[in-house]
Length: 231
Image 1: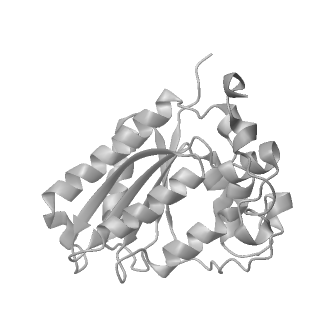
Image 2: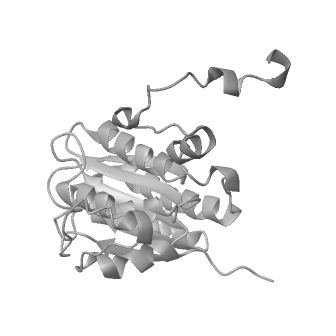
């Protein structure tokens, strides 16, 4: 049976409509379609997306109770096989809109619903800050057991100037091809590692990850982890 075409979702976290980040994301999605994927672009700057209020309700339900424009985006994220995040650099990191969007994905993180999705990153800055954007998103991918594809940095300031960055323009298209191609390969984490190490260690050894929850209390667990030949 033939598998349905994979889908790549571009998430533009720039507050500027048709800005440099959006231009690069559209080029990346064109590359994804070139590789046989379906694609869609979601812009965050024109949406009403509130910050996470830390209610912790999603720990149990996997759903966010906040009723805003994020509710219409969750199904798109879940349907996608690949996610390409794009953000301009504001004070050496992502925009506020990008961070709020990331925080609101915690409900999917809680139930491991982003596992095995392919992640790509596009960052645009006038000079520096690209590495910080990459670091944040790569950490997000790792926490969600996503498959990291690659990162593109563009240099531009005024609207439309990214088109002069020949490398960034070409690399964005290739990033889309790469995300789609990796998604088509259907790589997966082993099921035993679908959860975070925090959860696994708590279940297997009864040790919490938070220092305030007894991480350093009780007997060392080293003896329990020793190979049978050493016991």
